[in-house]
Length: 99
Image 1 (tube, rainbow, N blue to C red):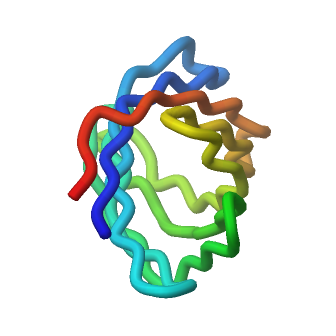
Image 2: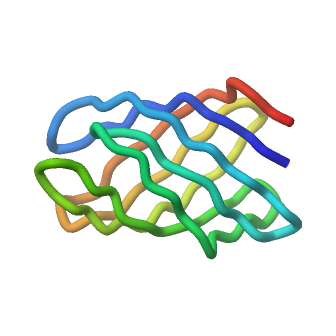
């Protein structure tokens, strides 16, 4: 199953718009995170019921940011906390596509 969410991230760099693509197979989660001027893939994520977690690295012209994300899916909505060395980013999102 593929789910795509438009997201809003509250970061120390201001409000950032982006997109998360989840590729779900049983309890395995992979996909991509687009935001802050870049797109990065993530692997080895997990999804259990409505809860998910994954980690990765965002690279843009200014920095490379390691992150760990944990959150929940509730109907068409996503909410998550993304832990980085710059603090915790609050993320909310809305489902825009599912297949």
